[in-house]
Length: 110
Length: 174
Image 1 (cartoon, rainbow over the protein chains, first blue to last red):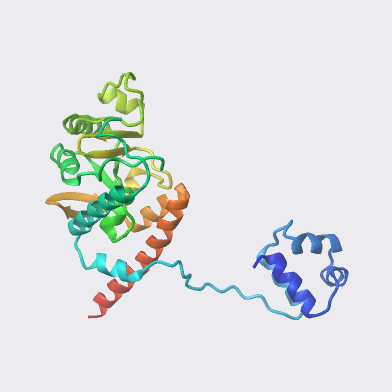
Image 2 (image 1 turned 180 degrees about the horizontal axis):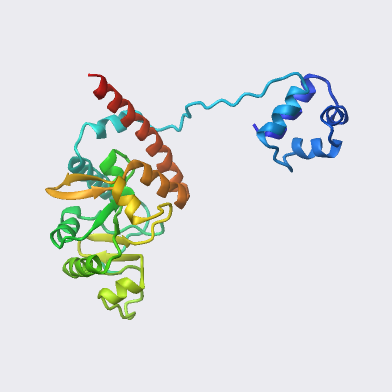
């Protein structure tokens, strides 16, 4: 969700027009419009103030991201020492090269 | 990547001359990531090297032994492997009988070689003592490179860093 979407949804929840919010914030309707349409990226403080003026708090939350990384594979590698990991890496790369549809260079020529 | 090398690099054959000639280098790139625990395959060996004259001399000797040639260069392009060539350039991508080797002085995302090497850890790799870049520096390099594959690897490195931290904390408690 963008800051603009966040603000627009909050404003709609409270039934406040862009013009009314602009008045509350001492700014212009066009500034509110630019923020809501993501043409203007507000600072955290600006967005916090606008949401405050709608009766809502803006909280910064840092959450663990699910990047889809298979942690069991990482755990397997961490059971190995560096040389074993690199041996595994070379063998794996060779498997990928063998199976890949991409063209391979001939020999070791440049 | 438009083409793949015919096979993965033979790290024993590439690291051996670098270590035996006393080259001051740090293992970086995908192989360093693998050494740290990554599961992403890598098809070349990347190293960062110190730029001082004595080290460049040692590097040239090692590269001669490895029999490097420029990768992707026209066959008729002359390439004189000597200290002047290395000093006049910075980053070189080579093809060798033992796989692809990238030799870098300027590494995107890294402020200085000194910073890189000071955070690197010395590890035994196939019987050689090798400095491996810190996971934080590998993360910085992936962030700077920012290609799709780098972003994927960056995500894995972040998870790996978390995992390693937890392993360390568990070890510290026991």
